[in-house]
Length: 296
Image (cartoon, rainbow, N blue to C red):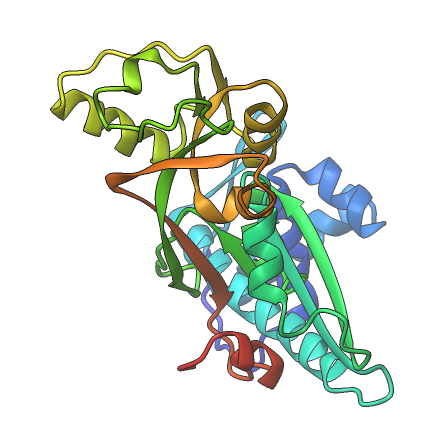
């Protein structure tokens, strides 16, 4: 392929390449961009000519990035991510619209923890607060595209060459056995009284569940829960309304403990839930976000 001197990168061509690379299919990309496939192919070829390297390999109707194409995609991600950051920053700084904070929470996160964390900004008239719930993977995609400012998660993420995540632990809470008030005045003894309980456990993908099973293994206990539930809110409801004993951080059932609807039997030794705040490493971080994350 002919080599050329790079004078100025054609960002219009780069944007077309970026969409095609993310879609992995020329037809879908053309539909998204509202251009013909032939016009899109022509734009990509012009970019390849300018860069002096092939960007795609055709595999049937699909496209696969070349080694250089994968490198170019990383640059394109950074370029268009920074562009989205510029727009987001400009909109967020508009005094006319007020301050904006867009928060994503993983679907399994305790809503009590979420409310407690956001309490400093909830109800303030100058702040427009948006809350979204989804899987961590879906939320990270929205954060990468600057459609979110912050993700709250009970799972950490790590940065790599392509993703500029910032991840910090904002809370670490002990995990408890919680259930209906015990009728007997005799204190609950752990682990002796554990085998007789109708246990409700978090799903097997939960870090709490892994820690609890490790603890039981160390104690030589074999337990068979009568229900396994991924959602913390549902664990709380089943413990409150169905008489089960569940394994949760105290914050999940704080209201029921306060009212007496549920009772904390004991804290589980060495079992904790960690809560993380995930952000993009941005050149301009809002003062509002910094107020929620001291030390930035």
